[in-house]
Length: 98
Length: 169
Image (cartoon, rainbow over all chains, first blue to last red):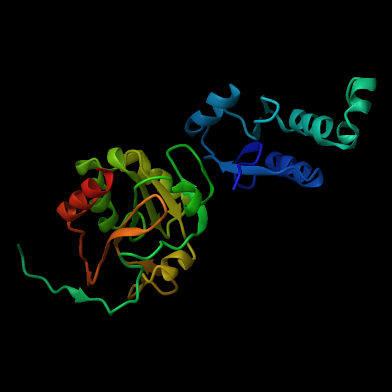
């Protein structure tokens, strides 16, 4: 089994994390979930990979992008894996991104 | 030692030496996070697979103290399995079991598949695991197996030391 390209750091029942999951599913992007603890002090792994202890955070192994904040992540995912991006990338190139 | 009555556990058709350890996928917990992992993907060398009663029971505490005392997680990959939640595993790993990762199997389906299920009197609805130790080689063949036949019973640490040394050398 090859590892999915996206790793999602998430907290159980966190609405902002669910929002990112919904977007990943809509775009049919494979991901793996790494669950962390509610206590910020117990989220060193998230701080190490993303620079902050907030979740959701994603690591995209293909593009090398690491990102926090669900709004930013959703925008990134749509821009990278959405219709505009999968159209051979032409729409993105022509219009500077979705 | 004070005399006490040990309870014999019934015979069980458990995973034994020479078998291939059945594959399964469960959340695997380390000191920082947990994620679904398949045993087949995690095992890539000599591996000690340790089944134990729920976190907090003294058998698990003793078991991981033994793992730490003997430094098994330095020699092989050490993986635990219990019915406790990932949150409980994280608490356990904060205190002991250095370098160990623990699968969470609350349904006890993996425990049942390995032939280790154990009903505890007075804890209705909970299926427990007997303590059990399996030493696997890199293709999940069981090189050494120990399964508790009494309650409580602890593995023979020296036998595991020898089995680990044989497999690693």
